[in-house]
View 1: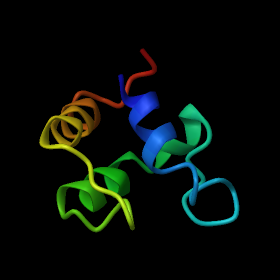
View 2: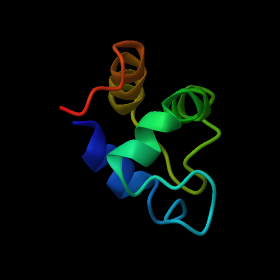
View 3: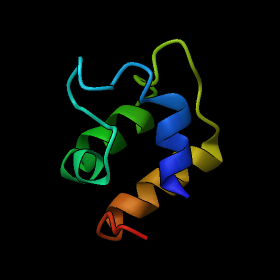
View 4: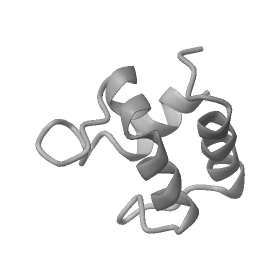
Length: 69
């Protein structure tokens, strides 16, 4: 459920040319706390808006260990 959110809202900028690289599970997982903080603060995505449901999904995913599921 997290991958489509990241793919649709983050990867256009965070595609290896800008930190963090969010193209892979490893890239998202290693930087999951940063991702969580940025979406909760609504700092990211620039030029886009995540729904409250998407933000809560990311928050819960990170708090539950950022599993690859």
